[in-house]
Length: 64
Image 1 (cartoon, rainbow, N blue to C red):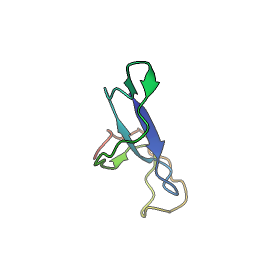
Image 2: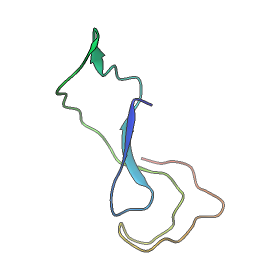
Image 3: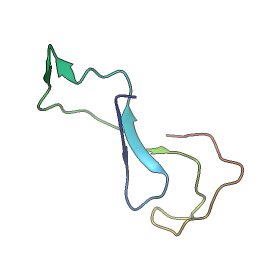
Image 4: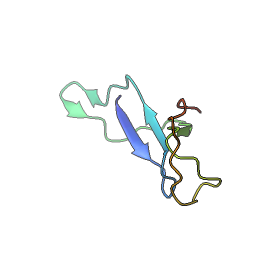
């Protein structure tokens, strides 16, 4: 995982990307633009994006 970011206020939504080289030579890339899509980690069964925690047992699969 190159990076992952939680989408607030959802308890289990996130965006992230894998296998992205964030360095060029020995320097960090200062600016990059990407289209990212939200994922649901499947750990909370709240009915809306900002609903209170309602734990999912057993945990669901991660979905986009």
